[in-house]
Image (tube, rainbow, N blue to C red; front, side, top):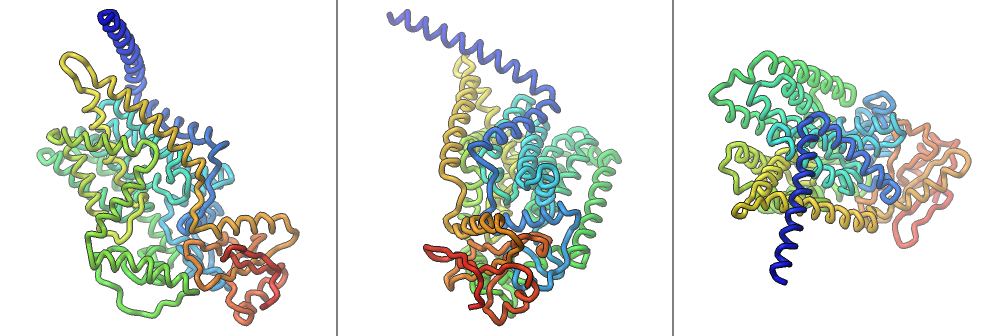
Length: 543
């Protein structure tokens, strides 16, 4: 009986090996067609998320940053870079949106440009998020083709789809992340191509990647570009001429010159100065502390905030991160952990962490050591910021995937005696990845995306739905309680406030509100009080 069982097991193992070899052979044939591989990854990302729309609909914005990015997308979708300041702007002042010198989002325009694309093509900004995530996954596949064998690059693209293209917050919110990761993948994917042969197409890709990073996550993008440039110098220290050819320098010069000119024009239209960023204007107006904890504190000055909750955000919450980091720099290590834990949350994140850890074993190989060095130095540079979210780390996703796929390659090549165990091991990892993605998706979809701190925004949506069905035009005055949570801001308007059916504004009291009421004398006025167990909407009586 024992002999029979052994023979049965051996035959089953032999059949499994034959099946796996056949699947791997087909996979290799597809992977060798590099452009097709990238397009397949893009298409897979689109198909998977669209197929889930029935159970996981297009996300609603909940957090201040999301509204600001969407506002930027709506502005661009209307064919303009900024809107003139509204005469009643003090009643509309909200988070992360500049009211002066123009009415515009403070954030760089790259992510908002994708949201604008979604609005113009399909009538909703989320489709721009979907497009950006799909292109990011395709760019990660292209990047990996420069570092590893095609079969591992295609697997890396598949892992990118499973991690970011199903229920990760990058695809189920409007924070961004995918656009900057796309730029980082183009820059890091150009590195080995430029180092080996001074490839002209790689120079175009690198230049486009730099342009994307400069207009999505400028600081983090600059760190990645500097590290990648240093890696290129190290790789080609004995043959600089390979990447100083005109075929390489010219694309970089053309794209970067155009980018610099376009950024200067954008800044001029939004801030009035070609060298002043909208983000800088917002920092000067509202921020009580620098972005980087290593910088000295701002000189004391009076800052005018519209209410106590806005002051709490900038002086207590935002300023608190700065103060804690200054007093105890160890705090930034935990901030980095917080950001990275969100980056790899859900999906195949734990598996990617395991694979990246496996790559350390092969750190003696120059290419692996280079990728791991960039990951480590990039992570260290991120600890200069007083606060860190996962999408801040987006430019470094490319190097991280390179490290992880080197780990996968190591596991795939493992042998026990004469047995090729690596093939079965990688197959098991892929099966486990599918199981993880399925269960994570079920849990995420079932639990929903609403943040308890922003429950008042859900009430805003119910009010909006009711008033949209009412005849005429409406003005909604928002009166907050003294303990209002700044995370639950509900005063948001589009670029063309006066043409909106519903205008949202702050209630500052009958006397102060009089100019606003006179300005909108033709609208029906409502008062909303979103705080407490029973939020209320009633006709405004002037009390």
